[in-house]
Length: 230
Image 1 (cartoon, one colour):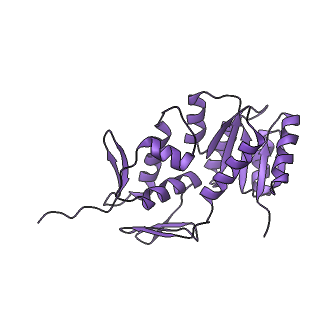
Image 2 (spheres, one colour):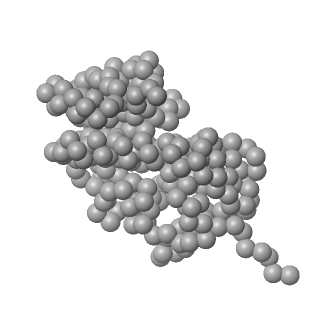
Image 3 (cartoon, rainbow, N blue to C red):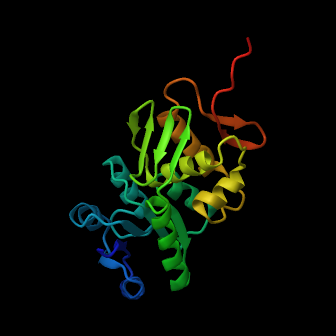
């Protein structure tokens, strides 16, 4: 089996060398650069399975690199690493398409664990088939369809929809969804959940009936439409 490919984008040379060594020791194949512009080219040339992306880069910052990748249709998972630990920065990173946000300084063990967690969430390890009304996830093929029409989702959108489907009929709070899908603390800020629920509705609930429901003051629920009383 081919090694998992990680594109490491970090302008601090010593830290880049240290991160590369830790990733390779853990079995990952790495390509690295200190430039945001080079990262855009390498993401196309090397087709990485995950991008580890510093926010503060000398040319294009990490947020702009992520925005351009997502605008081009890329679905590769992105883990931000940054010395900027404010909630606003974390929320921005995740709402533009990041899958995790790690604040410097961090341990190499935590970094490798976060990378592995994101890869598992965006991968096909479970092989389940999840169904609600005419919405279906084929986890083995990583395919989502509604009424037989395939829906293209980002890795984070897929992970959120999958978690809602596995808990269909159950109301999940924002904090529960943050823990399950993003797996780290936002200081109670649920705006990233609201943003991704909105993204999912635009893709999943484009036709009636709506399957994703807001329970005011509680959270979100994915369920089949209730029968209409005669």
